[in-house]
Image: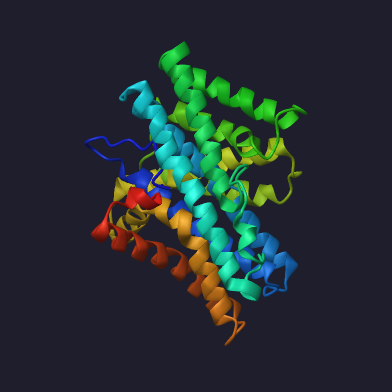
Length: 333
């Protein structure tokens, strides 16, 4: 997403925005795909698992890595109080607002919703621990505060090897400890390895460029995806695979953006800049499209195309409207 710790350097790294754009497109596709499965419209369990795994193997770890890559530089440029309070306005406020908006949309959808709510009293709940896809915002909030406190109050800025060591410790610790993995902390702890990997990557200047790097990274990505179907599904393998696939995907994206900047890459970069709003609101539009379209057809391809487009265009329209009448930050965008 246009994550709330993004660097605003004078020379913006196009590859980071392109990666966010690719990631948010996969988020919308993945949720549309799972929504169709929950509605009983896919019918082929093997096909569902294939597409689902190829997406969920890496797209969320990649977002955590992207957030980590710019976080230390961002955190060191701001007063501590300002940096900490901005995590409330840029992460907790959107989480709270859109948790209730999403629940209200489910209530309004009635029987058309996959997960149904009944009665306005069903909106009388506490938004934490996080629900639905908003777990990501809570996980980032905890990670950002922890690292902010570490580098501003304890250690000062850390080099890449220190972040890499912490990433390894968190992957191992969250994979094998019997404590701490609760609905409040599961996302933050099991994706801490990816976030810390991003922090390590952000302190290096090594970025793959050229055809050879592109081919190697692409082959690594394909090979790891194939391997994922033969690995046991444990917390350890899931975390390591997610980080490795994300790094390969980022290498492919950086090599492509270093070589050229065509319309498709600029489109993905634009989606990346707009990704926070898309992440917050896309499920309302995708689910609504599925509910309406189901009255006329159950064609899987048509549902995927329409649901994905609605999940992207709908939030972008909201963003355009709120920019004309106020500030996107009012609604968490």
